[in-house]
Image 1 (cartoon, rainbow, N blue to C red):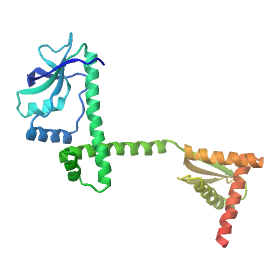
Image 2 (tube, rainbow, N blue to C red):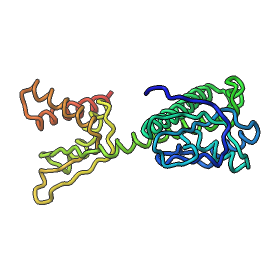
Image 3 (cartoon, rainbow, N blue to C red):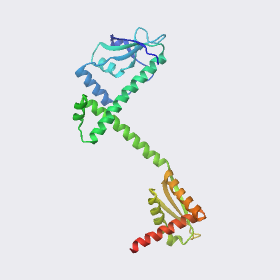
Length: 264
């Protein structure tokens, strides 16, 4: 984006209006913190306002950055505000500048939050971090809350993705299921664990009309299912047997191993 013509000047608060496309979001606590800081220190940096050809606002400026500072100062009874006035070529250029300004501010908060999070994990207090960084305690706390929110969102997304990817892994047992099913489940579960697979739920459905068949289901994630499928394919290829037979071989070997360990 070509650099716009700018000048810093003091303008009337009533001459500035919020943009119509995307004011930066701020929760109530962050807004309260900003209000306290502006009450105590006053305005420390100019807001970003602009004009461009054929804009709808007449005899005034559109706020493209610093909306909440403008709002707080208005609530505090200020008549004037320091602003960086941009002479944009178009509304699109103003939108792009505003987006870049907001992203930069968010990134700075995320960087501060990430640093604060790492330092608190190493035993530093918020007051110590703020003192070392030359920041207000409340700014560090806000940034820390922001990064914690991001971490929590990521954890929720990961858990949701895992739940959505759960599939049933089914095996049919065709050999004395009433006697063998429990032992079979134990063996397959043990085998799954050796492959790093977490077995969420195991069910068995024995066909009463034909007692030699049992359907055993394991709830596993898709990546875990892939691990088991690959293991079965390897054994099936090595032994030149079907995957069902390969499963029987694996489980038989595992049962023998379990029983052998018990006898030791």
